[in-house]
Image 1: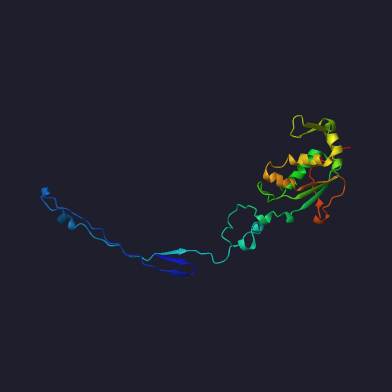
Image 2: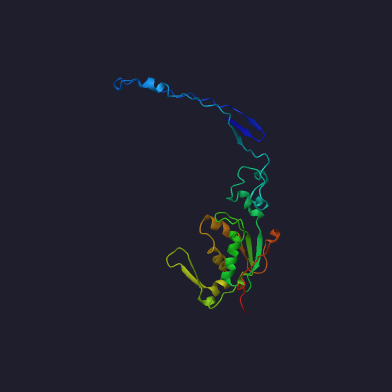
Length: 238
């Protein structure tokens, strides 16, 4: 037996097997010897020793990852053993807060629910090809002019917000119009929070939302870009 890899090969001859011993007994009741009668008919044969060479093809050159899949790997992993594993999971270096994108959106005359769903999509990172439900892959979103957000129908007087102080009789109920005059930022925060996961990840993602009353915000150093909005019905029709 021989194993060969690439151009080099080593040949090892396989040993010839020994013939199996045949044990024959004499049967006196037959009147003749069985071993004597079979002695001339049984032929002991020996297998001819053959040299068998098994060739294992080895890959001399490094495997090249396709161009459309190189974004999944680092430079040291392109020729590594895990390049054929198609399952990709983000690492800690893929969701660093300092590398995340910052968006800014003006809430003037925008429908509350449609604006909140668009913000939640970008905070979770569902607009990215690398979206992973259990990892913070999203961006930061800044909302300005929170006091000018709009609602449809009669929700200004019919939509209610409840909070409880924890004491007996401590339930407080406010309408949309009342809360908008008192704390307009809380309306958008309440809507977006309800569209985020409930748990540790959701609490971390909620910190990516920055809501401000008025047109100014203190995040100019992050160089935020305009939030892309695909919903054509997000703007209130006048």
